[in-house]
Image (cartoon, rainbow, N blue to C red; front, top):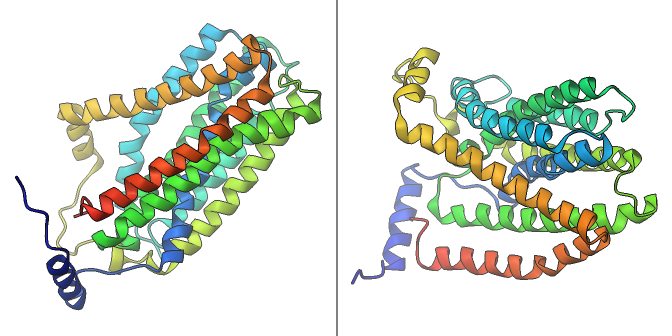
Length: 323
């Protein structure tokens, strides 16, 4: 049986490493602010999960074709990750490495999502297929630009293992509140303003503007959080680093079977999450005919989800899984 590590000894070692400059820390408010970067992209993701519902129920498109487009876009998302990650890895500007990607990615995301949920129902069917698929694809690119910073910038913000659970805690709380609160906001708060008609294009037009405005504000807060740490000193482009070209990355992608499986797993996981959320929407709106109940249901599950998140983070902290 493994002995539990001595907390005092680990703390002493960590303090020595700090003194040697091996660790750099962030203020708690910086971690709390930067964690909003993931929440900002997930705010857009909430609306993307309503893509199938909107295109079918509001625009009148075929469920089979829309499902095929959604599946293709999730696979496309999996392939954009290593490409944009490669570009990000080679980026170092006077505005930092991460801040430009976060801002540009969110601007693309805001424009494309709002445009997507404002496609007029009276357009021709063919035009609606082409335009919604194009806007979805461009939104994925903006989404990947911004999400590629979430993991990478954490090390620039703080590389102290003692602070890792803190980011997880803020991130989990924000997103639990987001996914539960968003459903309540759309189905229980906003829908009654449109006579409980969730097929009203005006509802989705208004919701898209509100959500993406919130996403932009959270992105600005995240940029403020990473501002002082978004420097070469912290994300460290080594002077003797080997020059990596895109064809080298392509060779890795083409020949690395585990990486290919990771892309497939990430894509299908996101697709499954999207399908699950869309299934909830369809069940409450088209089978139970009670969209307000979906909002109430999401609030019911919010408290236990937050509790489980808190207990999980505390467990990881006390058992030193972060090390």
